[in-house]
Length: 300
Image (cartoon, rainbow, N blue to C red):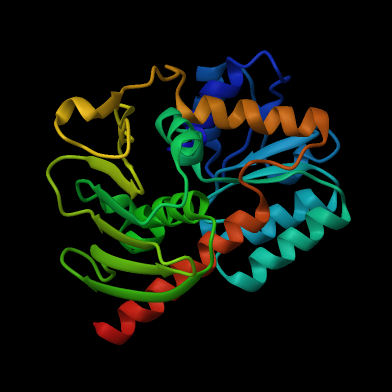
């Protein structure tokens, strides 16, 4: 599904020449190519020598093999999250990208959510963060748990917003409809004293994706899906009435996060910049997700 979304937006993007799409299913590849008015490439390796950059929206299990093939050939890569199936694979991709001087961006799309981008401008030393990400069960992702499927987005966002090392992880979860955790609750302790509570569930009738951030003299409430941001902060040294609390509702970009992510990737390729979500950031999110899973197994 993500590959189709990427293809649609790339076909509309004037910042790049869209060469084609490749899929392990030839019929699916041809159908998608027809929809976005490009060519279907029989094998991914056939793109070598034809492209400067690729977007890899393939199964996580083959992120390393496909990513290595393109990076080794000097092709810039945007790899969907998680960066790789294992930490050694992620680290090998990062090293290879550095050696070949390639842009390696990881598809943590929420970093490009206009509400998150605006919230980052207002955050200073957060003390407590509360994250909720709930949605309906999707049989297509039954082969992985809710941590790698959903929570990894929020792990990356919290690492980004706090900007401090995690010193302690507490995690609990349950299997409900699959053989993997369908519900997970996590508490992260950071070196600066900040605590983040994260909940992820795919046992919900409705999608619900929010963050609340508390810091000295201010509170931020963010809705990923709308997207929407509300900022509440003290006007002065003391609060005598509600009029002493300032309320801001910043105007946000209407552009979809995936389009902003692709624009950023193409800009990094053109200008040789390090992406906002680099291979290292992808690796850090993967490492934390793995630590969460280790704790889930202990407390199951």
